[in-house]
Length: 124
Image 1: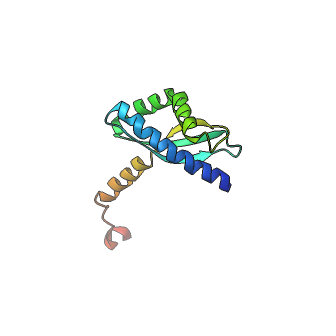
Image 2: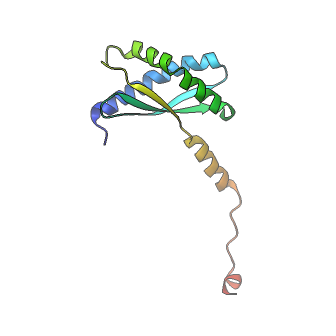
Image 3: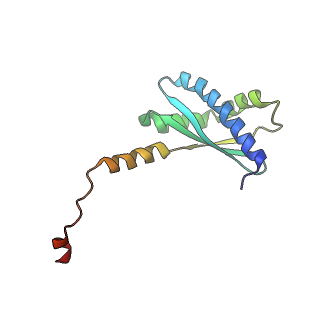
């Protein structure tokens, strides 16, 4: 269970990282990166950041670029939250694929459902 302090810091990191990625996405051109979730360890030293990347065909390349630039992103984050946090947590980026999962479910629901067996067929 997360403490109140963890939740507050996670919200702060999510907000600041969202702004950083808004500027970062301008460099990439045509990519939208949003921070969907941040979980921070109990000792406040590691934060797991879930990113949603659009368009879907550039997800892996963009995530690799973000992972390569982790030090710069952490530095930018440190400049923004230096007055609120004593130690800037290590950033671990993950892909948030819930939108793809929801899209897949939506596609399955839009397909014609199989017709139920009539009572004559089920008795045979």
